[in-house]
Length: 311
Image (cartoon, rainbow, N blue to C red; front, side, top):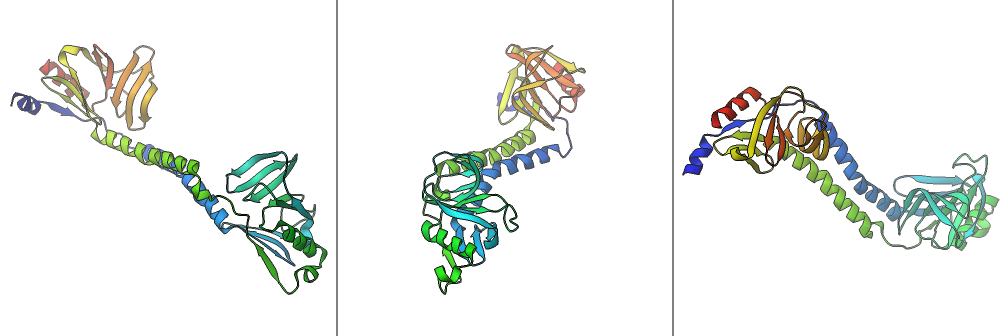
């Protein structure tokens, strides 16, 4: 009963209200960044699942579900098999087990690669005057029948499609079978971590900011932030108003507009604990046996009056 009566005598003080768009903007940015791995996984998984190489008398068309590469027969400068390149280095793009997409260097030559395998590849070169595709570029693909693919591309380039393909207007080649992008455990681990951060961090910050308040009572000064931290009167050496706040640098915790909680450092104060919605004066400084604490009640004068009354 005594503890309950003591709690009734506590005075509650809220932190100063800080209004502005910055917290929302920050959460949106964090959310977008944390969703990027999931978006990348879906993007590359879509490319792999819909990848197809189409060869006709008009040239080569590579479909990937999110776009298309078209190389007209007139733009083809050469085509051949590329069974096993010796030196392969990725410059920009994907280098997954089941999909290689982007700019690579193969045997010292820069190429654009769209493959699902590292062996038995083909290349299609474009000429300097190419208009349907990037000029002077080597494209590397991995059709499931590399020999027939090359033969048909060369026939289209030479204008001899019917002699090689017969009555067929177009031949579609599937990519060589490889592990699914969606089965890559590293990608899903990355997605799980980033989604946890993207969902967990805004929730913790929002919960911490909404629940932050201070209570002054017979036992001492209690800070409510994702729990309750009590500074007992016997451990508080001094409580004073801060009308000039030194520059605070965050060591650990959160410091965004409207929410500053954690360990900070300042030249004149050393290391301090901060529980405030702003870092501008006036603030309250607690000198305790375990260190300094900065609080940011909206009613600083009322807070100090309550401290004097209870002490």
